Image (tube, rainbow, N blue to C red; front, top):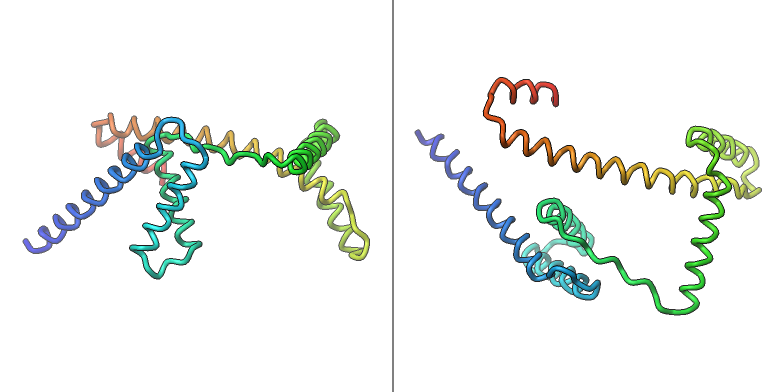
Length: 192
């Protein structure tokens, strides 16, 4: 009998935590608003971190930043808010430099657009081997190939994450709607 009461208390504590988490998400989203500026977002981020550190006294700045990232990830997943992007610098020199970097990257991507990813990886491996044989000589191909591979992989990873998010959302809904124990058991066996 006592074990049942302990389990019930744990269940209540867990339910309270979930309710508090959902309330925190709603309160934060309400405070952020529908179309927030980056300044408002950044102000709320800093206030969140200050509140976190106030409660978790031994937390370092990095731990508080990581806590906010976890919170924001869950918030975006559950409430689907859009986080405003950091505004670009209005300094003319910074704008010019950014445009130069973007143009250089575009030219690099165009130069290698006809080469598949596997071949690019092979070329990068060969460039590393050449560099290892003569470490005093810089090999500009390494930086170029790393940039091209990184940019191509960015799109692939983004698309994969988006597809996974949608499938998981559909799967959660299907599980919620399903009342057939044998079907749910089979699904669990497949996923484990």
